[in-house]
Image 1 (tube, rainbow, N blue to C red):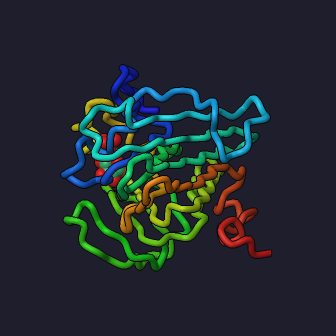
Image 2: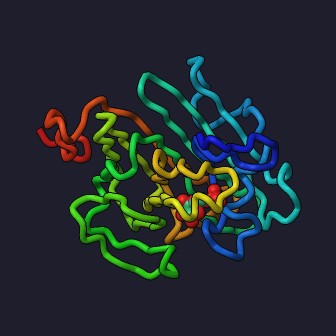
Image 3: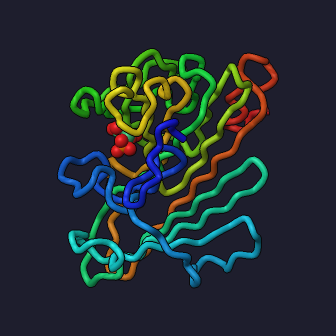
Length: 258
Ligand SMILES: O=P(O)(O)OC[C@H]1O[C@H](O)[C@H](O)[C@@H](O)[C@@H]1O
């Protein structure tokens, strides 16, 4: 979490994971990254059709469009199951269309990851993919690097990424493994120094120890007919090892090679 995080209501905390239901990054959006991350959610006592929870380390939450302001252009129920197990955090977002006409939306789970030093981080799994560069008017490029490293501001939407992405923190000897379904794209963001200074709830130097790698459905919005439900899945886990140590080949993490 940011050293200057603002924990007031009606504002997403800068850190953790925020659920963004919107035309993500679209200027026509009513609120940056949508309204869902800025609202108070309720406990969901009927998470059907998911099986009821049977362990203490899970919770079902719900946000109904009726609890959102009237500017919401559609009627929906947005459910989120959060489960925490040893070294593993699972999020299952679901959106049901409760209106009598179809609507589409983009969706992102914005994962703030804590790292030892952004210059020492390497992301595996995005190589050779096409991406939109938000810093260059969403121009489309193809990733040429073997792995993604950071030496300046980055804000990209990688298209059709694999279901597993590894974020390797050399200094901490820790790898985050991000697995996802139903969210084909991946956003990578680090504001770097100049932009960090301009973001009020981010400490000037916080950019050195954070990054966002987000599960997203942005390029092709999710289309829901009346009564239909969309479901996504995200699993974030850590592997105590490092690419440097030679004990772990990131390809094994990504593809399970033996
Ligand atoms: O400041 P926020 O609204 O939380 O957005 C923070 C960042 O999130 C993303 O990952 C986007 O790709 C960036 O364009 C954006 O600046």
